[in-house]
Image 1: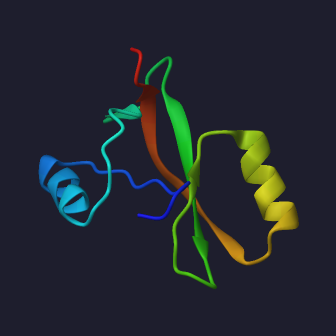
Image 2: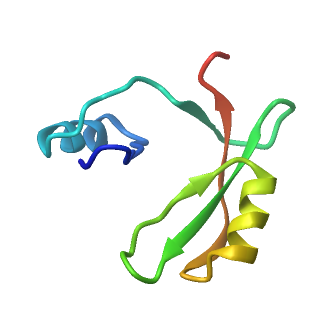
Length: 87
């Protein structure tokens, strides 16, 4: 992957496929929640019209800034909920 880019895997098979493509594992970023519980973070998803990339953020201010100022990104809503890795 190019420097500064990150990909996230939900399964071991996805993680292995990313590693096979040359990505470097950086460890667990977060744990996906199956239900909304105290301490869970809402993760928002966008899609780029230019690249097809799907950036994510769990920061509501960043989400709002992207919606207001970066028209090439379309907000797709909440992707999932997650817990910080240091849980």
